[in-house]
Length: 268
Image (tube, rainbow, N blue to C red; front, side, top):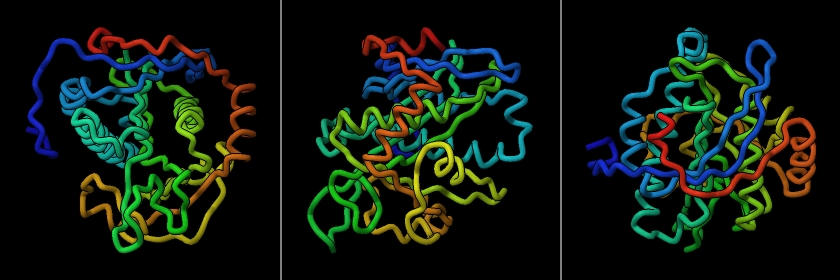
């Protein structure tokens, strides 16, 4: 049984939807294609097992932010499991909630979760997909994003940008206009928020605050230790999002794939 109370039933057929392919670069500047998959409820056994057996590459583990990166990965996988559980149960609030995994060949290199339902019963009875006070129902949120290189893999540049682009594409399909993100300020002073702002088109939106001060609260149970972490709020409007998508397409073209289910275990 995992930390969310789910006991995996190890079915041999674990699949994910093959969404898109992007070109990234390795340390030598060589082009390396990555594939982004969207996970389905039947991927729960894969997620449970993978979260427990994953190993970073030596180069990734040696980086200054390796500990922070691993913590974010753990939170992302924990939420991914909870999301797939809710989808398996047919919870309609999670119809616009997504889990994406990026692969370099047979090596995973990134994860992103988005659109986790959020509520504030003292404010209204609606399901919101952004934690920002004042957000409208057509705003979603990038909840977790982490990139890495797996054991036996190599460091790649552009995986995070590809995952962010996939979120933008998906937000259009889900009829979300704006996208919000709470960029956490880790202890190692990593300036991740500057990447969102300078490279991905997000704009600073309000003052630094604690995660626990979010107006709309995720319906997925979170580690209480997270509530005291400091974040910088950022948002991208639909107008800016479309402009950034156009620019991203010129620099890192998106190749739409067949959207069919693929056996993830064949990759692992």
